[in-house]
Every structure is written in C-alpha cells, then in structure tokens.
Amino acid sequence: MSLVETHSHGAIVEIRLARPPVNALDPTLCADIRKAIDAAVRGGAHGLVLSGGGAVDGPKVFSGGLDVPYLLSLGDDRAALTAAWESFFATAQALAACPVPVVVAIGGHAPAGGCVLALCCDYRVMASGPFRIGLNETQVGLPVPEGIQRLMRRAVGINRAERLLVAGEMVEAETALAYGLVDELVGIDEVGQRARMWLEGLLALPRGPLLETRAIARADVIDALRPEHIRLDRFIDAWSTPDCQGALRALVARLGK
Image (cartoon, helix red, strand yellow):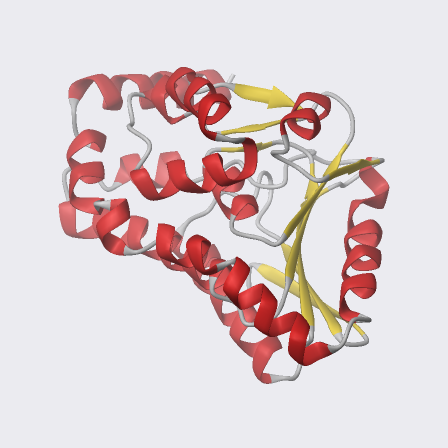
C-alpha cells in the first residue's frame, strides 16, 4: 500500500503525503514520493502539486521531517543509516530535477526535511496561521550540509539564511512570507486549491519556452543537491556523535508526551 495518494486534475497531478500522523519521511514514504513523481511525468502530467497536512480534524503538519524514531532504531548500523538518508536526498533530488513544475502545498508545520522538500519545489503555498517552517538541524546537533544551505540562501538571501541556519530557527508563516521562504499564504483548507490555481496560470504559457527557461533558472537547485555538496559521510558522522544522539532522544521524548 502506497504512503502517498495521487489525484489528477486535468494536466496537473497532486501527490499527497499520506503517512499519519505527521508524514514522517522514512525510506518507504520517500520511495513512494519518487515513484509517484516518475509515474505522473511518464503519464504526461504538465505539472505537479506536492501536498501534505491541512486536515481540519487531524494534525496540521505538511511533514515532520525525517522519521527520527526509525533512524534511532537503526542504532550503529551505518549502512542502514546511510541508505535511509540516501533515500531522503534522492527524493529531494527528484523534486529538484523534475522536468515539469512542482508547487508545494504546505498544510501546516514543515520542519527540517519537510522544509528541504519545499525548498526543492518551484513555488511554495503555505497555510496562514501559527504554523512554522525552517531548518532546525543545529538544535538537535546536526550541521546543515552546504547544498541545503544553498537552497535556503536562494530563497531568503545570504545574510538571512546564515541567521536562520546557524540558530536552527523555525519561523511562523507570516515571517516566512516576509523572508521569501514561502511565496504565498492562504487558509489551511485552501492550500491545495491555490497551489493548483497558481500552477494552472503558469501552464497557460507556451510550453516549450516555459520549460526551457525553467530548466535554465533551476540548474542551481539541481547542482546544490549533488553528492559533493551534501557530503553524506560527514553528516552520518555528526549523526552518530553523543551530543546529537542525546538531543535527538530528548526530542523524541518531548514529542511522545
């Protein structure tokens, strides 16, 4: 059973994260996202919407980021840890390199890995209200790889990116809009519809010039996620340090309360 749901809206395919309660990104969900992207493109989709959260009666989280309890359960198995992180970064790369435009509909909080996926998309529509987005890696003892820092700089500028990344700061939706971290705010029950509307407007342009110009404009997004800019080996080293492990276990304990 897939952990994503796909819905067709004419030439647009919506890929909805469907792993309750917070769409934590384990290898299976990451693989299902990649499969859905590939299937939609092969099926002739002209644009994609990646959505999550927004449930009126459920947790309002686009994605809570990587599945930390799952990663902690792997213990010192470096090969398994590496495979899990490779699956996540492969998903980010699939979004960045998608040959058709991708709009993300952020129906709630988007910390860490959720924010990374959003940064890989063409346009970000977020729910207005007390929802936070950002890269809080330093707060749990992890460095932010150069490639991910490039994505943040691209969105908010060099100086502001430094401030946010070093502090591991999560900002509320209104601030995220002011900083350029997201492009638009709407009511939480409207994020998917608004994402499709924006994409429909874009797709009304002549297709060939649109796609060629987009490919040129987004070449730096693809380049940012090249392995030499992620240095996964160094990231796994940091993950295994006592400081990081202690901070992550404290985080899991807080979330479990």
